[in-house]
Image 1 (cartoon, rainbow, N blue to C red):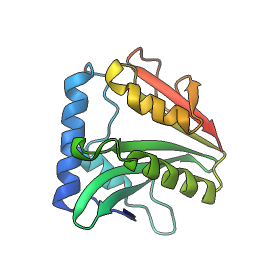
Image 2: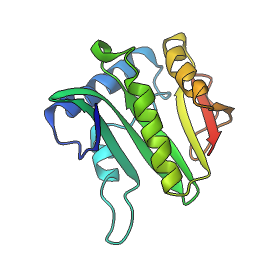
Image 3: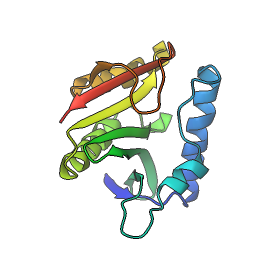
Length: 160
């Protein structure tokens, strides 16, 4: 498996992100879907000259097969947010999300972040995601950044 930075122009990642957003809209009430759409993600990858992009996006590959994706959003110079974690159904339960999460955490440490945050769903369908994050030391927390309290969201944080 190879993890690489992605510009979100390839057809496979476009399809995976559309599937992700469609699925989130199917299982999450309106107003509680916090996944970024493709256009917002692409805009956040562009930074003014001399600045870091707001979001760095990675994809995981096995040859030509897209195995998953994940992103890191800079909230400020000391904190980041994990975004857009997704593994296609066909590739789940193979450790891909764990490897992507470890990669994102390593980059966050390299950047000097002291904390990482994330928002995921509070429904049973999101239990595997919450369990993954808990295995990596994330703990429940309150809303952060621009999020507000939402019974459909689970907020988690980790001190690096």
